Amino acid sequence: MTSLTEIFGRIIGDEFVGYKVAEYLRENPHAKASDLCKFNKVGIATATTLLMVMESSAEYLAGTKELCITDPDTIATRLAWLKWEEQENLVVMTLDSANHVIDTHVVTKGLINQTPFHPREVLRHAIRDNAVSIVLAHNHPSGSTEPSPEDISITRVLAAACKIMQIAFLDHVIISKSGYYSICRNYPEIFEMTLAKH
Image (tube, rainbow, N blue to C red; front, side, top):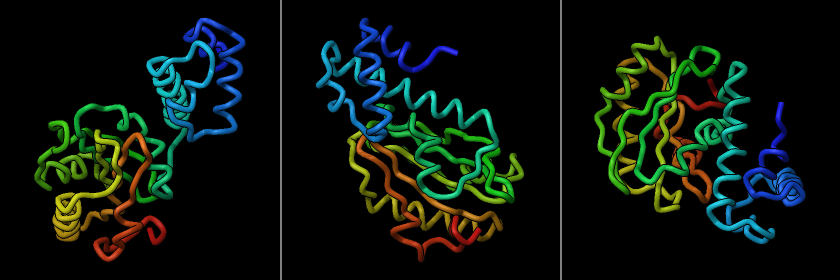
């Protein structure tokens, strides 16, 4: 199998720089594109490509084994591709009784900073997948991870709908290029059940 070092070298056009960048990312897994621009021959476009390759590799490896969602970190890792989307995407992950991912569905794809939806659009996927629980996630193209009042309101509405349908709603995670935000971690009172208690 081709190593990331070799792939980076081909993208950059210099094997030695590819090696140095790969080593840097091993020691700094949360590095941003701007951090990689300090390397010779690495501009912002190349740096962004390198990070996308890195995250795609992690997503591929996660997909080769049964992934168990244990905390917001695993959600953010699984859905890291969202941070590069230029429009806001709303995604639902359906889970079985052991918190293994059944499937991931894009519910809506909206404008630059909004994606309207109805709870039934989320629950439809959960019912079709025979899911025991769900996790909701969306991205903020602006780069902010802070939830808007609408984000909190939508979370409350979906939590109420899930309670009626007896489908556990475990978290709503906001993902951006600057990181992620777990609404369950910060507003636990909205959720009837959390990952820690599932």
